[in-house]
Length: 311
Image (cartoon, rainbow, N blue to C red; front, side):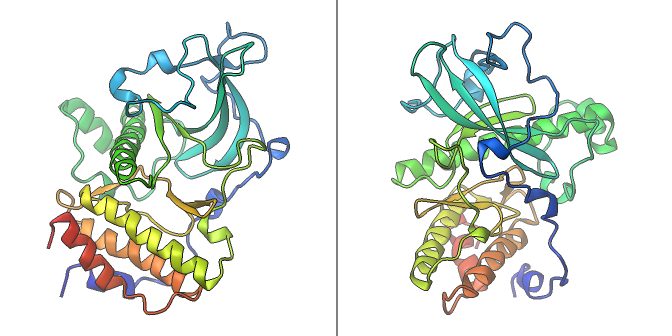
């Protein structure tokens, strides 16, 4: 018996804690604006909120090269907040336009802003943080004690971990011809910018898997895409760690994984196989309820662990 065998089948029944992650504001006209933070730049040009932060991120905190043609990297660009896309327990995601004034060069980005120390601390983070350590003992102590400084470091760790995971997964899946995550644009402190997945004309974000009603044939295709996406993670030695139909987008028939700050190293983290089994089980349950037959979460998990070299 694998160590993860007991986990999925004996989960406590109860309401999943997605309530404050479902604040979807579908159109730009209905979106709330971002709360005041360090986003606004006093010397930004009229009509913009700040100058582009592209030059502020070091090369290691920018997306994989070659940069996509659609991405605006000009230093003269400005950023404009177009309103919230969703709110969550650890971060808010807003729609941002980055463009060069008086030109047709612009792109839409998703801006994920992790909560700073004055907000509630991250939920259920202990198991995910296991295996992640900083070099400075002072920083490790601050994070362990959850001081204001420590919580700020944890927030930056989540942003950095998600950016690193997106970069690795985008590169691997792009080389395979089918990216399974948004393109990671840059990270700076507790802010992560990435490709906006949705309608670039209306600014409406792609629906989550949980929001769509696929036919059995469409559901089967999306399940195959989900297994392939999990295979990309496994080949990178990773598990999503909190995967469900609520953090998977479907855009023009393509499945895209999102919300990866808690990504788990399947080898370094002793909880890895169990969390992978939970990920697979969550999706298998959802797809099984949409007409996809004979889904065996345990068998799929074992196959993925073999791809990761764990079994």
